[in-house]
Amino acid sequence: MAKLSEKIGYGLGDAAAGGITWKVMSIAFPFFFTNIFGLTMADAATLMLVARLFDVVTDPLMGALADRTQSRWGTYRPWLIFGAIPLGLVFALLLYTPDLGPTGKRIYAYSLYLLMMVVYTAVNVPYGSLLGVMTDNDDEKNQFSSFRMVGAYAMGFVMLYSFPKLQILVGGTPAHQYAVLGAILGGLAALGTLACGLMTKERLKPVRAEKFSFKPFADLFRNKPWIYLTLIGICTNFFNGFRYAVAAYLMEYCLHGDVAVWRMVINYTVLMMFGEAACMVFGGLSPAFTKWVGSKKKAFAWSAIICAVSSVLFFFIPMDPAWIWVMIANIIVTSIGIGFYSPLLWSMYADVADYATEKNGTSSTGLIFSSGTMAQKFGSAISGSLVAMLLGLSGLISFTDPVTHETVVTITNEPAVQTMIWALFSLFPAAIALLILLLLRLYPIRK
Image (cartoon, rainbow, N blue to C red; front, side, top):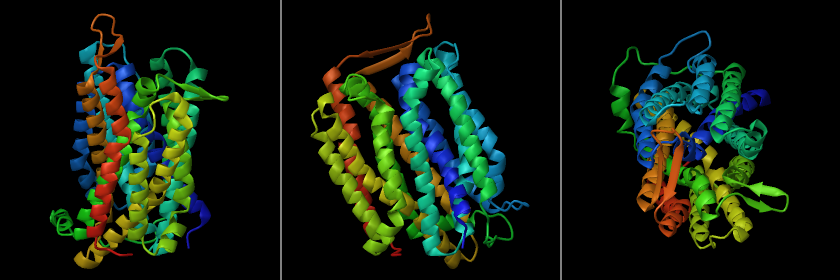
């Protein structure tokens, strides 16, 4: 049995990757690149799409490379230990806005974003694969997955709550605030990743093939559980991606800025913070909920139903700051579903890895878990890119003035932009949740 300290250590890994780096990349990057950094909506859409689709290729390659790693630190842990500092450094540089014209900014953003995706892959694919070699006990896998999600959502909660307060504390221009916070958060992400690598243990040794071949890649596409779970993983990240990417635009253009209620000022990070708190609590309850329902598949289905219904209901909430608490209540209910299914996804990847090892005779744990991060990036890439593209088509225009180097944002059709934002936060995710239900019916493993 693994000690509590090891489970906490494993949770720190996703507190760094999911709670800090990926959370900022999901919720702040679209708004940051268009309204602060100064990219056009088209540039921002292309950046997020190209850079993350690049990972559709690099993630499986990283998984295969991680599977064949042999070192004194194990198979997957060395990637966390030695990748921690590059992860934090590149993340910090990505939130820096250089004093360049449109072309210079475009080159800087594309270069750093691609590099960030590579570094994130080199750390996060081995991190996910760790779950397959720390224990062979199914209940313990669920516990590790639960600690992972609690770590991610707890850090996400702290980060979203503190971000606007830290901006005020730092002061200066928004570009300066993001640069300073990038350095702080990058440092924390590096520490969390390093702690995870040092505090965890690899108890099981992967059954490696004698030499490298492309057979494991071909085997993936004959693995029905992997195909359906990967599609489900892409959909869950579509669901989250739309909501997080559009949250800042919702506050800015639908509710016309921060909402002051009682002694609290609610901006886009605080708005989503309530959801993070719910995800943290119900992510911790996910193993108990799964036992109560009877299987991971059933628990996932009920979670998707909660997400679908609550997302549809959000669309009918009046677009008025007076209804802010109704919006928050809806976000909390939606996040209950997200909290339940998030640990299940990674535990189910471990089931698929076990299925593949039994069927093929050799381990492809890293390769299979890499599809989890691939799904994460693919779903976020398409959703983030679609948000920027659809808002641009609706009438939201942003660009960098070639003379002053300042960011300029204009709206040509405010009602269309507002309706699109509202639908991207509600109806688009609802449709994705219904697709998840369909895919779950086809998923063959019934644990």
